[in-house]
Length: 137
Image (cartoon, rainbow, N blue to C red; front, top):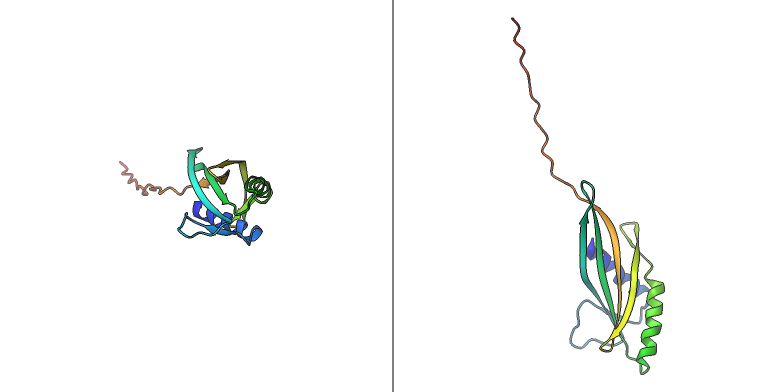
């Protein structure tokens, strides 16, 4: 599920910012402006029975090529707030929540989380049928 979320986020960025390159990792020779999508961490909490709640934390890094870098970062952060509202995976929509951004070392870090529920399959061992012989007197 996490890899599907990551892929859909990249698709959303590509669709809305088609002139900006998207990279998985920082590579030598990358071209600005560009995005790097990182999965920061995930957390899974057990709920009732086979149910789990999972939270995945993402960081979309944006590097600008403009002279007015801070203004470009503020404009991009505003555009990301509007673009990253919901994400659709396997015909189900998930809300993107806790969005925030910071500019650090010349990079815009747009951070958010996606929460979803899991239903794990558990291998159950069924009891065998037991026969009872009744012997009468």
